[in-house]
Image (cartoon, rainbow, N blue to C red; front, side, top):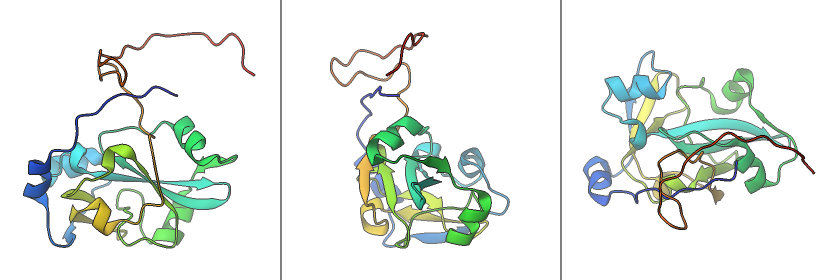
Length: 181
């Protein structure tokens, strides 16, 4: 829940190779997962912006992650101080954003708060949903195209990633919580 790790910095050359002057819409019929988009549309998972939708203390909120990263819900709670946290329902998502999960994105969204994981800060040439079913956007520059209200470490640290203090690979061991206050 608390573990952090060091990520390789964004690759400016890779970003520049995929950068566009403005996001470009493209059809993605039937695409609903990170893997579907990666396999059929030259959008590797680490070049995708995954948009998760949560309700934090009654407020529908978009959470941006890199496509190959998992969000640690406890980090979301800690970063926002929210008391009640739950994933938004499909009905809430469609009513708020006009699309179903699998086609969601934060480009141009201003009616709802947007939180983003630190791993997407400074990224460009990314791919994300267009808030239209079966349509995505390529060439997204996070700083230019997304209004992020808060940046936080929301990512689940993975075994083998470098420690932020010493650089050694992280390991995972099972533990038992004896008490909780």
